[in-house]
Each structure stands twice: as structure tokens, then as C-alpha cells.
Length: 475
Image (tube, rainbow, N blue to C red):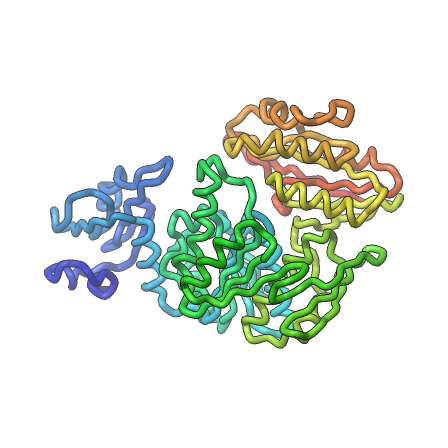
């Protein structure tokens, strides 16, 4: 490959410089590769330039001042090495699915992604999803290390999906991934914004910076005449609408009154949810066995995304009754003989926890709610006492346990959480599996137990150790 085909502004004398591939990990560099020296929060790629050259790199792209040839190595300066890497990766693997959708927001991303995937599958359309739950097609599921995958890996995945004749792909766009330009170079037909609340302040430092990272999707990564799908009732709607008007995007909204898609009524019938909606002047009705009213907005956003993917809205509505719970998202994992329920949920932010608990409280009136949860270490510490306060408000019993302590003292984390909890409600059991067992053993007739924080995850992180944390529950 010739570098001039990928970097238009490169000096004429270097345009015919040959390269064989790209990498950002010096240990994975091969002969004639381009090495992208990324300066991260913990590791500075510039320190590994010599190692990359030793392994065969013939071109270095970095933020260093020097440009030109030195010892037969071409050095190219970039003001944003991450963005350069992404654009390079997506240009090299230029064949991609036609309809790529990105979902961002604090909570609900995985649910919207999976519901969209299910809706298309139920309508016999080829589809793939990429995010926290892995890479999913009708033929396989593969685990991923990050919600938003690195651009080299993602470019290869998208190219592979295209070869499999999959043209509908929906992916989760995390704030970290957007901030680190992992999606630059991709162009999305539809962008979805679920909601926004307190999270990841250990990384973004302020809520305004966190929101700015989310909005980057709509500011920079949508194609001309793209669609935006969001909730008219969220505070951030005004900013999203401003972007849509300025860039002439089509904006579709959901709400309880004056939006494109209106929720006319919602009711519980036994354990089903029955919903009546109005869209494009037509009225539709559907029911679902999914738990929690919050699921309705996630479903509606997925429905609108499916409609923008050229599916009949009537056909979409007819498939909703067949939607299955998303792994670890208000997922009922068992009914105990005394009519008690055990529910698994990924809620690990104050807003997500409040939403999940209030949804269960509304759906299961006059039933006691018990929770098993903790908070992660080496992450946003300010949310811990907030989550303790929320659990205290909604729950009758609280089994405080470890989440992913990482390199923090687990006891210190638990102490921060319990500050706003009534001591008569607390059972503090550091071992997560034991806490779950105890909570199940203590359940009375009709009780609801929510095991929150880790959702589908089965492993806990204690420093360098990884520990299996779930138990097999038999009914």
C-alpha cells in the first residue's frame, strides 16, 4: 500500500512511501508497518517507537516535532494520533455495511442495541450488533474487551460483516470511545441518544465534558441527512435539537405527549406491560413480558431505528411480543417456589439504579424489594454514597457486597456506600456469591430480589486476580 493514497496532505516526495499494515502496539508491529505512537493516560506510545522500529515498523506517526526521513524511517507528525489511526483503519478496510447505527447515552445502550438486533432477526433481516455484550450475528457471539472496540479491530470486524452480506449493524458508542476518536472515519446513518446522568467522572472530570464526548457523535460522525432518535423529555434534548437543526438532520423523538412517537397509555396486566402508541398519525398497541417500565422507551427507540432501516412499522409492532430480556438488564433469572423473583441488572450508576428500582416498585406494588450490590474501585467515587441513598429509599433489605474493587480496599468502598443507608437494613457480606446466597435464603413469599451492578458479567477484579462471582441458583 502507498501512503499517499491515505494521507492527502503528505509532502510529494513521501507520497510513494510503501507500508504493509498498521499497528499501535509496538510488540505487534510487523515488517513495513506504520506505528501510531498514541500518548494515553497511562502509557506513552512515544516511548515505544524504537521497539516498533526494531520489530519492523517503517513509518512512525506521532505528536513529536520531527518530520521526514531518519535512518530510512519516515516520521509523520499528527496533532491527533488517535484520530489519524481511526481514519487510516476505516480507509484501509473501506468495504463496510451500508446501514451503521450508533447508540450513545449513559444507560440503556445495550438494551436498545439488542432490541434492534432482535427486531430485525424476527423480521428475517441480516443484522449484527457490537457492544458490551459482544459481537453478535445470527451465527455467532464473540466477547469484546471494550464497549467501543479499538479502530483497527472494529474496521476488520465491519469488513468481515460486509463479506457476510450483513448491511445492518448497530453498535454502542461509549463516551470513552468517542472521546478517544475510536469511531472517527466511520459515518453513521442514524445516531441514538438514550439519556444522560452521572457517570465516568473519574475519566471526564466534569459532567459538561462527559456530555461533550457523547454529543461528538452527532456533531462529527453522522452522514448528510442522517437520523437522530432521542427522548424529548430528557434535559439534553434542547442541545441535541440545536445540532439537528444546524446540520439539517432528521430528528425523531419519543415522549408521553408532543413528539413524533407518543405513548398514549401504559398499563400492567399481571406481569405483562401493555402499551398503546401513536406514530405517523397511526395508533398501535403491543404487549411485552419484559420487566420494568424503562424497557418501553428502550424498545421504542429500537423500533424507530428499525423503521429507519426500511422495515414496515406494522411488522415491527407485531414482533415486540416476542422480544426476550437482554442479558443482565432487568433480566428475571428465576422464580422461587414461594413466588419470589430474582432479577439480574447491570445498573451501576445512580440514575440507572433509581430507574430500575422505581420501575420494579411501580410494577410490583406492595411487594418487598431486596438488593445485592456494591460499587467498582478505581472509578468515580462520588456516586457511591448517592447509590447507597437510592437503595435505602427503595429497598427493604440491602446486602452490601463487593463489585470490582480493582486496586482499592473493598472495605473502604463499602464504607462510602453505607453512609446514607439505615443500618437496620444492611447486611454487609464482602464475598459476592455468599451475599447472593444469603439474600435468596432470606427471601419471603412474593419478595423481589435484584442483584445489581454487574449484570451479565461473571468475573470480579481484585487487583491482578479475576474471581468467578456468580452462583448457580436451583429452583
